[in-house]
Image 1 (tube, rainbow, N blue to C red):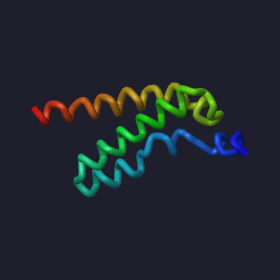
Image 2 (image 1 turned 45 degrees about the vertical axis):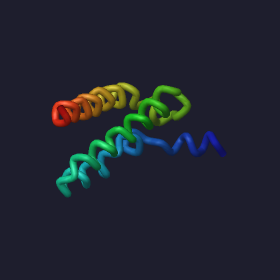
Image 3 (image 1 turned 180 degrees about the vertical axis):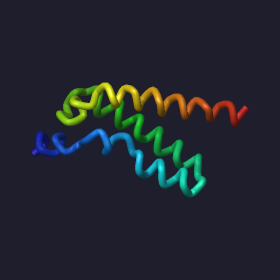
Image 4 (image 1 turned 30 degrees about the vertical axis):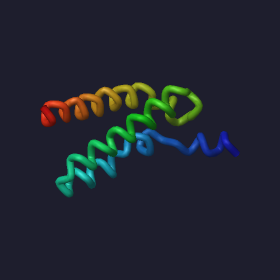
Amino acid sequence: METARRSRFTYEDVINKERIDECLQEGNLSWANDRRFSALLGMIGEAETELYPLLNESKIKIEEKIVEYISELEKIKYFMI
């Protein structure tokens, strides 16, 4: 049962792109960044464990997305200074 559940996680599931895009379309950058942070936790926690077969196939794309999201989140500190 656990193996079947892990087999359902895909790249699209962990990057939260649709939810982030919705927030951006609504003009809510703060919520978009919350979604990015949440996605980062999932990408790091689920993809790096190598327990999810479909995520393992997208490991390079996930690592690139991690860098992209961190870059976006780093911009927050410039607005808060």
